[in-house]
Length: 329
Image (cartoon, rainbow, N blue to C red; front, side, top):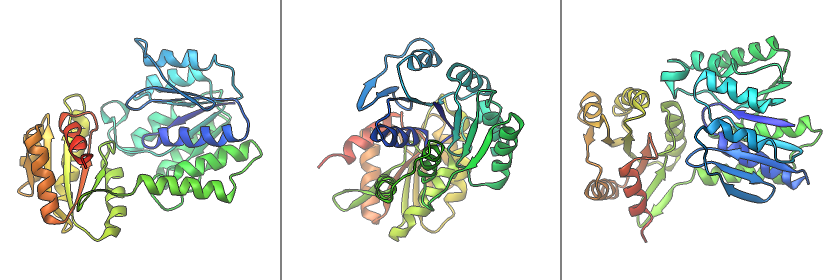
């Protein structure tokens, strides 16, 4: 069986959870995740991939590895490359984790358009489509495409916490294999997600690394979840030259966010951040990408007794500096 993990957020988490569950059942499992670096999972072994010129070419080699199940993250970010990916992998199962506003310059400027772009990659090899997206209009697009190509449509369960659709997808894949998650396994996966949603501590400062949370909807879901701690938030949003569409989306989000009473201050840095600060307004401050700025943000957050939250982009200079400082004992 070959499985494609598609969608916008949570793909790597889903691959990792599913891989472990199937290895535990004695199957030969080969998986590939993307993200900051490409990783190849072969049974219990995890290897770094030396990327060729074309990232899509990696998948030709992955599916040649002997396996009972291959699970491959669909990292493609255009409708064309998603279709090419599925033509290479020929997955019998496609799982869509969710649909979020990201890569809008390629996939479409609305969630409806992005859902259509993702669904357009389903092809004649697809026998089952598992959907983790909750919004009914998005679900309708995914279901309609599945039915049009003759695939069986399955709705994954959501456990009411961010990212829990990954657990629902694991459950549905196991059902296809006439197996199921035990209560103990389900509890372990829920605990794993909750650990990933936990705040970290540096002295008296509580902070959360949401720098990989690259779309406003996911950021808002996460912020609302973390409001249970009863504290205000200091946001550090960091922008990249090659993600201008993301910067534009976050600018609108931050402008709305800045008006909420639980937001103490917003700091922005990176390419285009001066314009974002002017657009968002007086509660938003531009800072340079330097150690002094990182220290300023950390000390301000400590002084306010607020949660410091990194957002928007991981691969930025200031995030590297912030994470190094926040990890100091």
